[in-house]
Length: 273
View 1 (cartoon, helix red, strand yellow):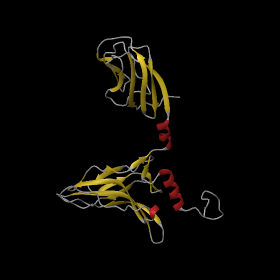
View 2 (cartoon, rainbow, N blue to C red):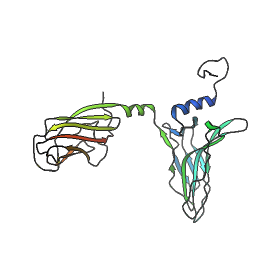
View 3 (cartoon, rainbow, N blue to C red):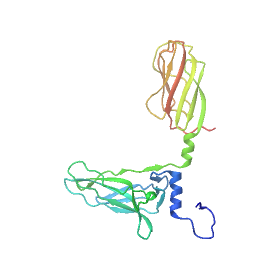
View 4 (cartoon, rainbow, N blue to C red):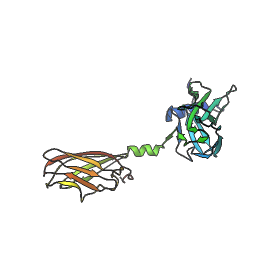
């Protein structure tokens, strides 16, 4: 029977199960830390204590909030032995159908060899599971020493980031040694260059700096050279863009007709519309 959940029914009728189903349907069936507060940042306090910062997470549709930092105790390691512990957020439903969540340290098995992670509960509450673990960190121990914690969760980006990843901008860029321009198109943080040009000069270049620069908003993110390939005719020309917008040239344009193409990632702010 259909039921209107987000509507007034004259009685209490909306359930946590329905809210979890809505979250899972929108956010997916994976587990995520949300991009707010401390994002459950971990701090190693001592040889047997860590602090987990504030944060919000969604596990199998269940929303868990940690409003204050929490200390967790790690069982001391043993000399000559290695061990992997896991810090998890554990969902439980008891016999009275009361649901709760807490941060738990799952102790691994000591070994003189390569340690493995301990087993965790993986049956989703959406599938009837009454205990479910979302791993947050692996805590490696070598002897009595806690190593660097390893984050095991994904941070779910907000919808504004998704929107930015789909935003498109375009401009034109005049190619060195030519009176012609090619198109620069940006979709999210990926830039595409393409077009046909007629070069008006010949001569060898050995990473010669061009007068032209790649405009802000389209500059490569990488500090190393990013090629814009030139092909066709008798040209042996390659253009290399740098993260500063600087362009260097290699080879001979040979006054040829040629095509230009390139793809790279940018870290520039999105240009205004």
